[in-house]
Image (cartoon, rainbow, N blue to C red; front, side, top):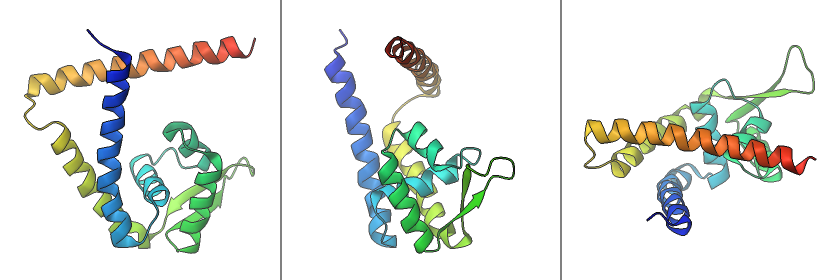
Length: 152
């Protein structure tokens, strides 16, 4: 039997493992967890390059993202660029100085996935991918329904 509390505890443990691994990079490069999260997001999502995208896709606080973006700009790791068509939209881009951090995050992600899927067969990985895609789609639809119900 599947219990909601077990499912949520599993998600939290996975996040905790990832954060503990990311903290090693934070310590090495003198970053906050939020700053490292933003660098990771921008590196892995080149088409989603605004603070709003980070807030939406990572479900983070707007204020925390804004503060971390400003700090990364001050550290010369990130730059802002206005959108050519909509001046209200500001794009974020990693600067070359962020490259060593990005590479460290790539190695971390590889290690994280290795830890998480240790002992899985190719067939089990394919099943996981299928199930996860369905989880994501079901969650997206449920959130949209709730959002539309709230707006009525």
